[in-house]
Image 1 (cartoon, rainbow, N blue to C red):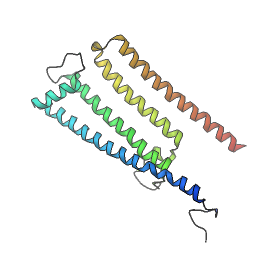
Image 2 (tube, one colour):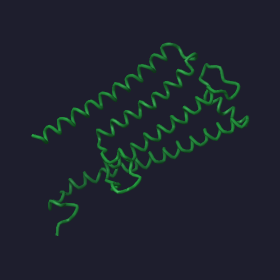
Image 3 (spheres, rainbow, N blue to C red):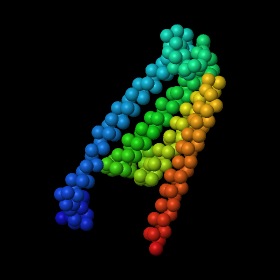
Image 4 (cartoon, helix red, strand yellow):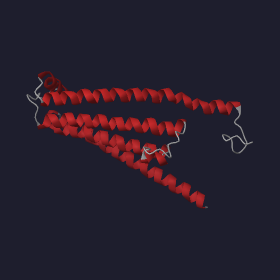
Length: 202
């Protein structure tokens, strides 16, 4: 009777089996990222609680919010105004986007490099996970990093009066570098996919 793990009838040699099993060493790393995700969830709710508390007139929450959004060298706000709320909300969005990045690394990385999770028939399977591979994962991670960089750049521009021209230019150039890197990764992936499809057709 054929072993379902070895449909071609060939078993891995002990050395090959040992090397292949070494992929499970990545499991503690993904579990550690899940703990990091828990820290981000806690941080998100602490910031949201303080924002709601400040909006309702809680002085301690207001001081915490002011300390969080005040840029070194800048003038701290005296009340909860539109700019302060915007900066806090951008910080919350930043946490969400980093959490999305963590999920992509945890789920996509585990599925790609460790073991299949067999989510094909699961109603909550992420759309991108159905065709994930190392190249797709890199492209999606690059896109997520661009989103995070955009949030940080927007926060810098809101406080542009505090920064000098060199700092603003440097952050803009870094963001452009992220954009070009993502385009290069996507273009390289497209070339490789086209080459592989051409080889199959021949």
